[in-house]
Image (cartoon, rainbow, N blue to C red; front, side, top):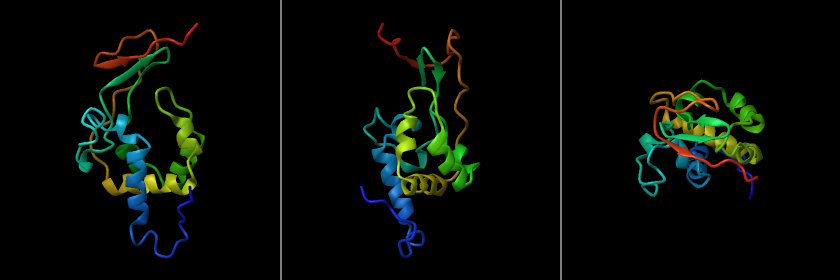
Amino acid sequence: MTAFSADSPGAAAKGNYIERGRYLVKIAGCNDCHTAGYAQSAGQVAEKDWLLGDQLGWRGPWGTTYPSNLRLSLSKMSEADWVKTAQTVKLRPPMPWFALRDMDKEDVRAIYRFVRHLGPAGTPAPAYVPPGQAPTGPHIQFPGPPK
């Protein structure tokens, strides 16, 4: 894949980062978890409702995690902080943090700019529930690793 260059003439002014970010959020599966009902509706969720997080938990040996509200999270970060976080963060399952880490830096910037374009909205996702504690809301139960 050819890198999306910030040095392209007028890239930011023409909104190319926004369009690239929208495309990446769709194809990288960000909406699958971070947008309530997206996967179940085959992507038929209005863009204004994208990336608000979800109340559906993912429970496994690591505890129970919830897809965060990316619109709130990224509204509190600078672009440089987001790029650094995307390249270094290690998160609990099922977040594919390794895919985010391996993304081209310009694609990471495009995602940031698209999410910021959507604007902050919604409420924070539920807090992480440690192993051995039961979540109070709906969740998907993952089996333990094979023995």
